[in-house]
Image 1: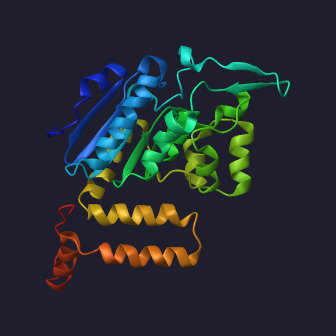
Image 2: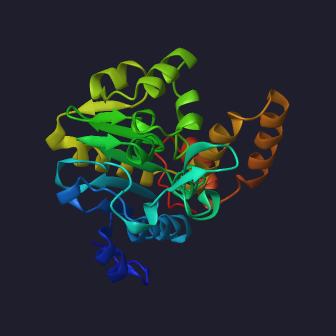
Length: 281
């Protein structure tokens, strides 16, 4: 393990989150295996802070998210009192499942947003159950390693709920509309092999090798030009909502920012006919 300056590590651990750094890769490990890493509000808040640490700590150049005990994440822990639903909206005469919190400010959406906008590449290492929030938590990675036992499930429809945790956004940008609707409208588990066939994950490995493979990928990313990797990640994510002219404007902006030491090292290495040695600056 390497030194890192996260002030709330013990609080995170109490909430069920392990966090450590090795070879400039941060490991964010959900550690509530007795309930397949279902996420409580304290654990959710710890994940948010851990993602902030990844984003701002210059000593961290990539991250791996994984679940302990053979499951990635079975979703939100619905046994918490704060998940009590408001049963009826009398103004409309219909039953609604309304959270008692502002979803945009405090909800699960913020985790996906912090992964999507993080300046560091994030590898999700998924084995076992990835249900509900856990499904989209896995899909939000920049590189997704799935174990052969992984099961992705947009279970919301079977609970009478709309897609949550940015599921509609992620699915509609990862597969065809027909596939997205098949996944979301039936709410049935999607096995790892099928997820790979449909382009939802990058690679499938034996379950016992998931974390090792994710670590290998993250260390490779961490050895690259960190700032430029973050900019390319932002370009690709933003391009999903842009027209061609807007993407050109982004190119010009990022080219203007591409004068850091890693960019200079890349040009020097090219001239000297050797592999570049990036420092993340």
